[in-house]
Length: 247
Image (cartoon, rainbow, N blue to C red; front, side):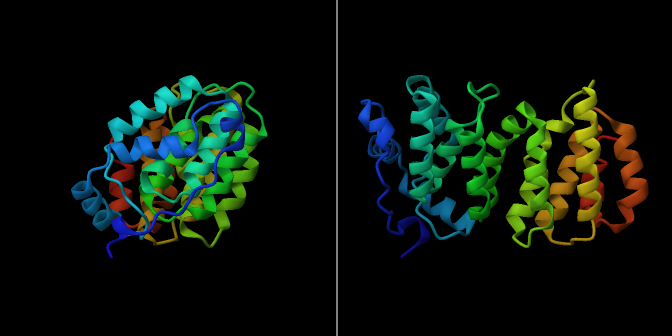
């Protein structure tokens, strides 16, 4: 049996959503399965190399579905649906779960959204799902920089994907040409984490450092130049080259 044909666990219904007549997890999964492409699913399974069910649903279709779902659900309903979709362990369902929570402004932006995203981090096992979940987390960090206190604990974690998430989930800090004082301090803080990462030779860690520096170089080239002068010799050659791509 191929990974794409692995049995699909039965996901628990989302009680809040069902109680109000909103989209249930069964309805969401049925919508995903309706867009399935078995040949594409086999290719995805071979590419991602993680044994879980794959449906072969293209990302643009996931974007359209989750956009419509977000528009028709309350925040509590989105949380319930996202949690159940994630628990299904289907590749596209996990991506959809992250997309349901990827939004710059969420009102109220309180603990449940952030903590649901954080609860997924220890379960990361492949880059694509991890990156989609980190995109949701980026928005929540930029909305409340105090969340970096939680993220900092990930920087010394033995789990590769948790450690990597600390940089990928903070990429929002690289984007501003004119950061606020708080954002500037947060940026400096994450550069400190990156400096500690350069001696970790694992490809995904080196790639994450390079990604952070490359994006920052578009907006703060002197900071990246200084970082590479201080720490570049400890980086793997491909990562140093990628980090300095736009310098």
